[in-house]
Length: 281
Image 1 (cartoon, rainbow, N blue to C red):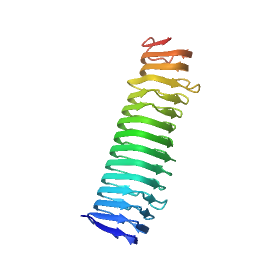
Image 2: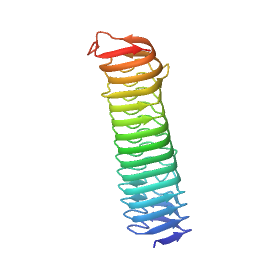
Image 3: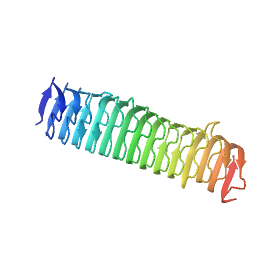
Image 4: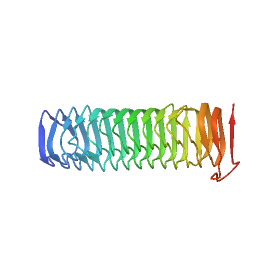
């Protein structure tokens, strides 16, 4: 049975260092560092964190209805089996080098450089703002219900499934491997460059020069807004687009079908003339 600590406050260095099986209720952590470092099987309920680096080198933590203030930057690093629910994170650089992370009904209000080099992530009903470079080099992400404002998202990720997302993100999905996105809106220029096996299903895409230098790109029943010009340059692609594409430029191979295509550009820089079949319905 867990020991319960309630209605207290801590400050300074390492107040609960290397403790085990603790349940925290309505506890506040004032300025200091590494409050819950090297702990195992911790629970935090309705707690407030104003300290740096509170959850480092943890194994097993449940965090519910908690607030991580702007002073708790870099709060959860080098840990395993972390579950956060119904919480608010106002600090950047959260979640680094984790194995097993679950976020459910969480708001990240200053999400820059968050979730780097993590593995086995589950996201449900999460909102992230200011999330530049979120998910950098993560492996194994399962997302359903996600709203993002932040550029350069999902760079260098592998083995990802995204459902029901609204992504406002320049340079999203660069150099990714084995990513599938269902039923989502993606707004931002230069989408998906240098990706391998990127698949978009029932998605709405907006932004100039999308999906260039891709290998094994697939679009199924997607729409492309009027600013999606110069699409698919040097990409191998299988695309079935609903509606019009404003322009296609020098694809490297495959098939592109749409209801209409405003301009097809095959100039002297086309590397594989005739390798891509382009048609309209």
